[in-house]
Length: 256
Ligand code: DGL
Image (tube, rainbow, N blue to C red; front, side, top):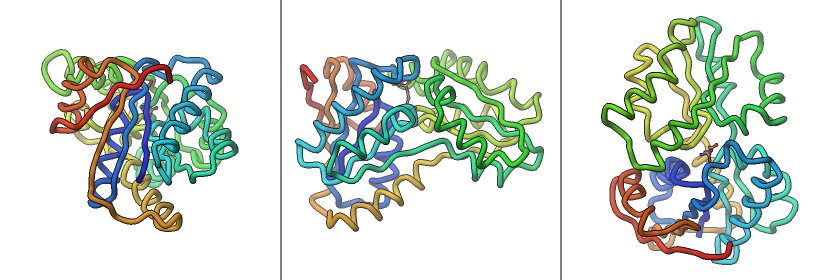
């Protein structure tokens, strides 16, 4: 089984990319809703939560753990790799492909304040910006839209436009979705920046997951997809169904 976690429903965008590549593998998705969002939390707390989530997934039988969250990867990937025996797949904003794609030399990274303020992102910038101007935008309101299952409508369009529209005027032609909550809002982001190239690392993370799963000897199963939340399943289920596009089995877990 492949385990994935995120503070909430954002990592479903990664699960979807994994599902597209590995249609018959069994997936277990954990939403740490009780602590969502991770973006504004202190890195020590994100590390503790990531460790609790990844450990739970391994105890459930996950042979690979995907950190389906840029913020958790930024704060915790080293400690997860040091403490857990299962292979860990992490993710980071796609700055390198963005810099390769830009024609104006200006790219924007949309991510959480935790990711943008972290050392990993500073290193990524030093390695890959290559003279391009990197505009960073933290959009916590967009994270909340996805947690509410609000992927369209006037309020969602206004929130996304407020984050994205000003970037065009600044000459930005390439947008990096540096938070896994943003791919579900991609149609609204594209509408607010119609000429921009949009970079989503979900498919690359899925390809890496497929390689790691194969190396770990994890083969196809029945193609099941189970979900768990540290929040109230009755409250999470409707938004989860909207973000995934269909209802999914969801259990509540306590005391994690
Ligand atoms: N989905 C998460 C990410 O990729 C973060 C959202 C949050 O909890 O603030 O960074």
